[in-house]
Structure formats: C-alpha cells, structure tokens
Image (cartoon, rainbow, N blue to C red; front, side, top):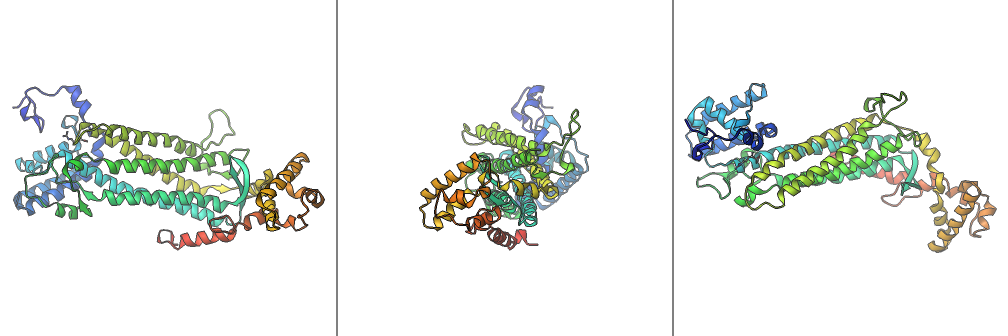
Length: 463
Ligand code: ARG
C-alpha cells in the first residue's frame, strides 16, 4: 500500500494534504466534460488497437468499460470524487476498477495535457455550433418583426437627439447585421477549432507509433495540430470564443438599452410581454424590463471572463502549466450566459409589441426633416453648406415660434431663401423623408424591402 494512492502517486511518500487536494482539483467544474472525455478515449483506444499498441481483446474490454461508465454517468450513477482531482482521472480510475489492470493501458501514448486540450476543443466545437444556431434564431425573430413593420416610421437618433425619421424595420435590421457578423466570427473560429490536439503527449510528442489522422477522422476533425508544445499550451480557441462572445453581448446590451428606454412611459415605443417582465414588491404599477437589464448586466461578466482568460495566459512559459486549469470556468460561464441571453431575446422579441402610432407621432419631432429641406435647396443648385446655413435659420425661426417645420408659412420660409416654393411641403413630411432615402443601405421602403428579400434568399433564412 502506497503512502500516496493517486494515479500519479508512485514517487510520493506522503499523502496529499486534504485542503491542497480540494484546492488543486477541477472536478467540480470539469465533470461537465465527461462525454467529450469518453468520446476522445474511445477514439484513442481504437487507434491503439489498430496500431497494434494494445491487443484487440484489450480494446474491446476497455471500450465496453468506457460505454458502461458513460451510461452510469448519464443515469446519475456515478460519483465524481475530489481526491481523483479531475474528470480524466475520475473516469480512468473507474475504468480500472471496472475492467481491471488492462484499463491502465488506455493512457498509453497520451497525457492529461493533450487529453484536456482535446476535451475543451470538442466542447468548444459543440458550443460554437449551438451559439451560431441561437444567433440565427434571434436573427429570424428580428426578421419577422421587421417584415411585420415595413411601413412603421420611428424617429432615428444620433446623440439620443432626434435626427432623421427611419423605418422601424430598418432599425431592427441594423441589429440583424450585427448578429450576422457575430455568427460569421464564431463560424470562422470553428474552422480553427476543428484540429485534433490528441497525440502530442505531455509536451514533446510520443514514442509510440500512433495514427493521429485516424483519431482525427474518428472525431470529425479536419486536421491534426502540428507542434506538440503549442498544442498542449494553446488556448486561443477559447479566447476567440470569449472575445466573440464579448462583442455579441455588447450588441445584445445595446439592444437591451433600447428596449429599456423604449419601454419607459416617456418613450412608450415597445411593450415587452408580461412573460418577460417582473413587478415591484412595493409599487403595484411597475412592469420592469428585467430581462433586458440582466442581459446588459451579464455583458459585464462575459467581458470579465475574457479578461480572466487573457490574464491567465499572458505570462505562461511553454508548455502546460496548471494555471491553464483556470480556463474552464470562464469558458463555460461565457457559453452558458451567451446561450441563455440569445434564447431569451429571441422569445422576448417575438412576443413584443411595437407601439407604431406612438413612434409615428414623435417621428417628426425635433425638426427631424430639416436635412430634407437642405437637400431640397441643393437640388435647386444651392451648395450644401449654404443650404445648411439657410435651414439652420428656418429651424431657429420654428423653434422661436414653437412650431414644427411644416407649420411655418411659405412666406416665412421664402423670407430666408427665395429658392423655396410651395412644393417644399411635399418634401418635409416624415413619409417623404423616409421614402426618398433610396440609395443602397438607406431607410426607404424600397431599400428595406430589397434587404429583406436578399436576406430571405439566404438558406439560413429561407421560409
Ligand atoms: N485538470 C487539468 C486541467 O484542467 C488537466 C490537465 C492536468 N495536467 C497536469 N499535468 N496536471 O488543466
């Protein structure tokens, strides 16, 4: 009986200090990787037999043991224990208990360093696929609302001051574009993730005649990593996921900010369904947009996870360092947070109602068609800078008289520019303002309808 009965205990004389055991263990969070760990072990084991490194009968015994362990875990009949440190050793120890000493052959030509690199890659590959699908669904929800509001006009803002009227559909499609870039970023990372790390041993490679291409094929990887030192110490894929997640959450946070503003009694642009609001324990009238606030808040934690991971990695010499065990919680937390936020936003968006009357009623506030008067003067051959000056005076006059632009008389406007004729009144309605922004990428009904059609012609968004 060894004084230290760990799987690695051979050279130790004292047992591990109890608290150190807990402090260094990752099982509390890496047990989440069990399926990937077993999947990787199965592929590795098949390869060992194919290469004659273990016997076929040994392979069959080990595979049966691994399948039984997988079934036990899924059925809730497996207790992970802290003294076995991590998911890899919990499973390996159980395998040996189940199938006997032959189970100890599974770890031939493998290290926990390349094993954990494999597990997190498999996890990340799945997580990316799920995130991209959730982004697509949120984009579909935006698309549906945009299609349902193709004529609704709302105020567009800069500096949160009324700027120019826009279509609600155009505003919603702005978010569609942001999420489109997010999906593209995640998908691009997926190609870099899809490279097999297993087979590089602890850091220097392995002395056994392994077939890494075979393992890559078994696990659906497109290729194998090229440098053993890099492979066991590379966490770029996780960093990319955390970075893309931060940008995605920033987009969701901006949408949240708008939903929160838009649901105030001052704006009244949107009514978020009861299903996604909470009340106040004291103020009976309250309907708080908690989901939007929480998503805005969770953005901070996703940024924090990116910072954690970057900081964990920044001083690490090659190759594996135990610091890297700290990669998992930020990654898992980021993936869960992003998935939850995307899902709830798609549902909330589909059930939200837009108060298009209210939006239309305030779309002309703040002299929002002033640029249209300037453009009118430019079409009459006045240089834009001069037109800007004239319209500035028209706005000042309207403001002084407490009138909207279209409430000024023709005479009042002509006093400021003789180029103005009665047709001016046709171009300063909010409808006309929106409709005339026909150039590609603009808010006119035609331009927005063309965008919607283009989007619907993509296979992800086909009906
Ligand atoms: N639990 C470890 C981790 O998450 C697995 C790799 C451990 N390797 C080692 N040499 N201690 O990073």
